[in-house]
Image 1 (tube, helix red, strand yellow):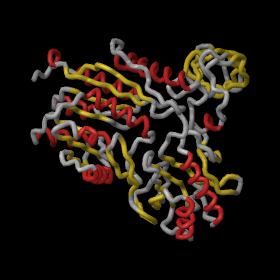
Image 2 (cartoon, rainbow, N blue to C red; image 1 turned 45 degrees about the horizontal axis):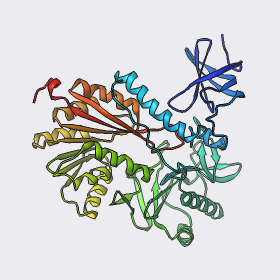
Image 3 (tube, helix red, strand yellow; image 1 turned 180 degrees about the vertical axis):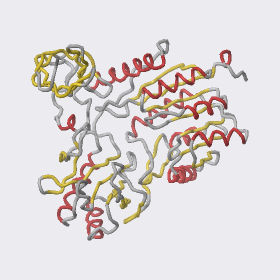
Image 4 (cartoon, helix red, strand yellow; image 1 turned 60 degrees about the horizontal axis):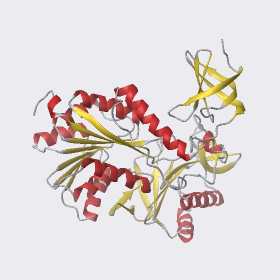
Amino acid sequence: MLKKNDIVDTEIVDLSHEGQGIAKVAGFVFFVDNALPGEKIRMRVLKVKKAIGFGKVEEYLSRSPFRNEDLNADYLRTGIADLGHLVYSEQLKTKRRQVINTLYKIAAISDVQVAETLGMSNPYAYRNKAQVPVRRVNGQLETGFFRKHSHDLLPISDYYIQNKEIDRLINFTRDLLRRFDLKPYDEKEETGLIRNLVVRRGHYSGEMMLIFVTRRPKIFRIEQITEKIVAEFPAVKSIIQNINDKKTNAVFGSDFKTLYGKDTIEDTMLGNRYAISAPSFYQVNTEMAEILYQTAIDFAEAKKNDIVIDAYSGIGTIGLLFAGKVKGVYGVEVVEEAVADAKRNAALNSITNAHYVADSAEQAMATWEKEGIKPNILLVDPPRKGLTENFIKASSAMQPDKLVYISCNPATMARDIKLYGELGYKLQKVQPVDLFPMTHHVETVGLLVRNIKDDKRGG
C-alpha cells in the first residue's frame, strides 16, 4: 500500500484537463505537476486518497521531446502558465483531444468532426487584463501571483502572458505604493489597505485603466500617486478605486469611484467600437477573440430577416457584430452595468436594432416568448458552469433554427449539448480556439441545428 513520501519509478501516460501529468501506480491514478506524457520519472508520493493520489517529480529518468525547457518554473507554481512546459504546437493538439474526449465521454458524440485548434503565431504577452494581489512578503509590499492552491504570494515582475505595458504599469505602481508607504492587505489580520491592482488595456487603442482595490475609502496621497502614474503612462485614461471590505476571494466589491479621467476605456473588435468599464466582461485575448467571434458568425450564416437572441450578452460584444447582418438582436445579461455598457456600445456604433435587458437568461426568454419574439438564431456564451436545465428547455421551446454555443468549459458544453440533443437539436460542427495559450483553458464554438424530423414537439 502506497503512503506519503514513498518514492516510486513510473511513466506519465496522459495529461489531465488541468495540465498535470497522469501516472498509474498500484491501482492508483496519480496527478503530477510538471510532468508530460511519455516521461519516465522518479515520483515522491505527496497524498493518497481512495483511488487517486498526488505526486511530485523527484527526478526525470527520461524527458519528453515536446517539453519546453525554457519555462520559468514560477509560471507553473502559480498556474499563470500551467501548460507552458509543453511546446505550443502540442498544446493545440492537447486541447483538441480534450474537446473530442469530453464530447465522447459526456455526450456520447463521436460522429462530429472537431477541427484543429486555431492558435496564435505569437502565444505570449497576449492578455489585455491583469488582476494582481498586493501583499507583504519578507517585510516588503509585493505584487505577484499566489502559488497554486494557496494564498502565499510569489513576487513576479514579468507575467509572461500579459501585455508588457500592463506589466510595466503594475511594477511602476508597486514601486510608488512602497515609496508612499501604503500598507498591503493582510487577510489573516484583516489589516492594510491595498488588496489588488487591476489593469485593463485596449488591444488596438492602447488605452489603459488602473483600478486600486482597497479595504477602505481613503487612500493616502492618492493625488500625487495619480499624477506620477499619468506622467509616466499617458495611455492611462482612467484610474478607478474599488472598495472591497469583505473577507472574500472575490476581487471586486460593489463600490466603484473614478479618481482620474473617464469611467471607461475604448477598444475595437472586428471594426466595432466598445467602451469597457471596470467590472464588465471583455475577452482577455483580443486577437483570438476576433477569431472566436468570426467563427461564431460564420457558423450562424445569418440572413437579413433573422432575429438573433444573444444570451449572456455581456457588454454586447458579439451581438453587436451580428446586428448589421440581421433584422434584430435581443440581448440579456444579469449584470446591470454590463447592460448599460451594451446600450452605450450600440449607440457608439450607431446600431438601432439591438435591444438589451438586465435579467436572468431564463426569465428573459420567457418574456420574449410571450411577446411573440421568434429567434432564428440563439447565441449562448455562458460562464464556466454552463447553462441551466431551465434555460435549455426555455430556449429550445422557442424553436430557433440554429444554436451557436461558445464555451470556455468543454465538460459543461458537452452536458448541455446532450440535453439539447434530447430536445431535437443536433451538433453539426465544433471549432476549438486557443484564447488562453500556455494555460489548460480552451474555448470552443459549436453549431447545433434543429432536427425537424426528430423534433418531439413538432413545429
